Length: 377
Image: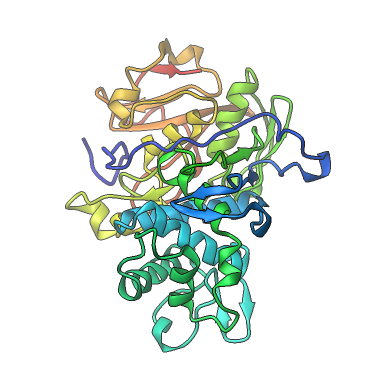
């Protein structure tokens, strides 16, 4: 296995289940989340995370694609630091109250997701979701070491870290919402004692990049670096490809990525460590595939050599958009085939440490290119 240069790492994180439904139930059409957006519902009145929560005191919210990407980052950073699911719920509630999950929110001297200010956060990039989340968790672990104890109210944990003049009640109203969101993003389970969860609009990916989809036609965004439209074989492939494209520009992270999106990477003892992948949120090549196919309910194995054995193998000459391309046998790298524009073959990939998710030319002449493709759809 070639580390750092070509992805396909064995991740230490469990696959997270993100529920994708075609409809948000009884919501009005105007309330339907945008493509990649999600409605987060709170559990009914009763026990939530071991604490009584009155439904009348709780709020719900619809997140757009940008906000969902931030929420995933907050949870991924927490998991990477060993913070429990409840700790990530405290962070989500805090960030939602302070900034509505906007990393560029400004209020006087306060900045970012958690509206951090002062010498305590002088060395923190407060507009970077991963860095500012890491700073929040450091203070949570320091100031509220018993944060996971249900006897400590979620809102009190948030208030202890933030020392807000408005008091804990503002964070308390996000208790059920944050608990439901954390439950889904952390390990894919419903909130304790309730049915709150996430309902997402399918088809456009959940990443920060808006992908325009019309039927089975995808318009490449500016972030792709090329202009044009691509026609997919069917709607399932459209969802897979749009999901991968929605994370264009996301940094490569060795061992990063799962069914819910980008995650903190892992150590490799070499190139990836030199780039800090073990503390940065992103995808490696196989993690990007796991995420994209999870959006249509296909659970891929985690590493590229196992993905090479998954699904149906076909000759490269029969490749269709949505097929997986490989280099090496066993594979050391995997990418998602997009099809052709003006006779040129393109793919989307997470290439190597120090790089980002990008659209690239298919490297058929590079040593190790596998002359077969895998169709998992």
